[in-house]
Length: 269
Image (cartoon, rainbow, N blue to C red; front, side, top):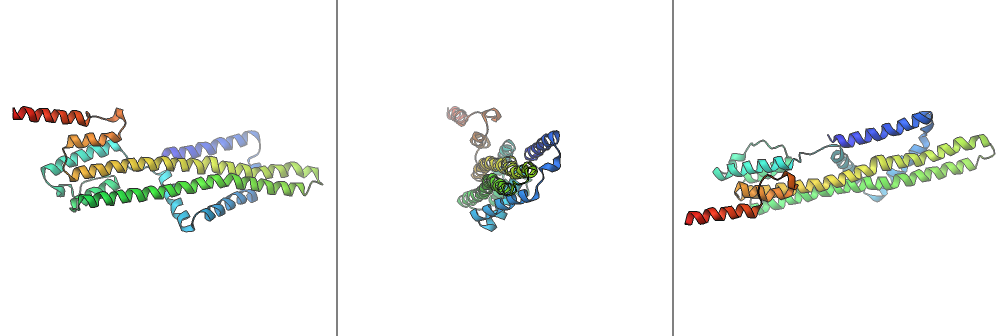
């Protein structure tokens, strides 16, 4: 569960509600026709922009990605890849059968190695899955961004409808104030939906898509290194480029390669 997304929405709603209660009655801010104009209009505009099947599938994927955290601990994945590489170099790929792997993408890559699939096929399969997953999340992001663009527009449309209704009954001055308040509520609804829900979730999806692609690229490199039975230390160095500098434990690849060459030269001498 992504606590940040849930916490942000709760804090935003609480702040708005407290601001409303501090100045007036909460029920003054509830207007069903205005709310229906914003929700219905936004949904209709989204269906015009995207195919209906894409909307529901991408919306589900988007909500799941926004509110759930995947197993994306890059440091843990690198450490596990190094351990698997050591095991494979001592034995064969069957030693990894039944290994406990929490990351689904990493688990699939290891299973392909255990099954003896060619390295080129493994690279193609995992890369294709990574790209398709990123595409699904990008569609979800686009849909939430479209909602964020449409909601304020339909809020303004609702306000215009309310103003027309208000101006048509100006023979009674007492109704002007309440009618104006109701007309402005649709703008409020549209702004809240866009800036508290839709656009933040779209930004969260964009960030998570980039992070997921980074982690999956790391995993692909790890799987290819395990399949090629690289030296675990060299493999770790190759994978740690995906980490921030302060999270890297090993020296650079050239330094390790230099030490290896020195040891080889000493052995020949």
